[in-house]
Image 1 (cartoon, rainbow, N blue to C red):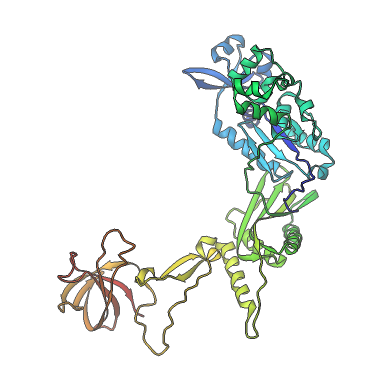
Image 2: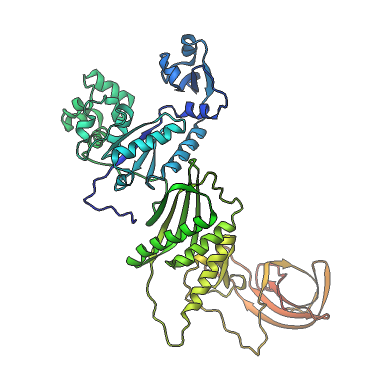
Length: 518
């Protein structure tokens, strides 16, 4: 399916609120249950206050924000744990990953909530009521306390999830659904909420009955915007936590699957569906991702890139097979996968190419396929391509770039006459290495030099090839180089250069070896 919703489809947002996420995390981790009420404390203004509490603690009359000393006075046997906001955020992200099985559009809502854009996806689960029940029951079976609601705007769904659990507001009825909710459901600043209550405005309907000019003058524009979003009169765009795929295909299984051959066949079938959609739109995938959803809630994603837009199912399946075989941490099916999804995270237009009579169109395709296979097995950063650069500096005449992302280069490598010996070494040292010159011809090549603790006597020399540095690119002046091709008495050939000219520059000349001839 392609994620470009029709204008006639009304937006539907499913809000999830994990009211006891910190305590649920601690209780799920304990092997033996503790019958004492559990609270999580945090330090605020040099005092310990309650950050979160479980159901038993709430039934004892404790509330978040209460001083820990007061809580201990009210409840003698109280289990206290230190707040770990990083662990809570990590757990919330793990739950969001699990929710990807319902929709790829999942957004984080504060520190204890999620927003799922289920527009056009509720019919896959038997309708809105059935989907809400399925999501909520599955999360509760994992040991979490969750409240859920569904509405046309994120603000309305969020308010209903916190104050009217299980509510489904039909399209266009958000104002009626939130009318009798308390003003705290608007998620305003505590000072604004208290001011509304002192004014006698205790419900959203009472606040909505006031004129917008009156509310703006007293509370500002942001408060009015939140009110309108809660009433379904406007909406604020959501930011999904992950990049939404341009195209997507998925396969849900009635029973979890574990066989590797069956998984490979599923990827091939999904690739065929995906390529069929991209072919209709004249596009090909540059970034693909396969998501494997385990029946126990675990999720594993495998991504691969391509050197050129690709929409051939057999090649896509082959690349994923290469990628899976090369994983250092192989995919563990556990009790089986109940959903496999294949998405094209980035697609580009695939332009048809004209072919000449003597052209071999399969050559470029086979090279691109080879690059993709090597990148899938070893990583795209390890497969490099060399491209010429418009410069006369020897070490900068070519650069290595990832082959899958190499742009089209308009320059060509300098052609060499086959019968002529190369004037420069084919491969140079990664960094020029300094040499010690024992004797030399005035303003000419050295007669003897020491390199890597070995003394070389020069038998033949040719040069110089003078190269001036690119002064327009360097803020500080750079010395001129004189390159020489020299051969020692043992037949070894070196490419040396003198960094600076005698008596002509402010630099003291120094000698380096830059490359070796074969």
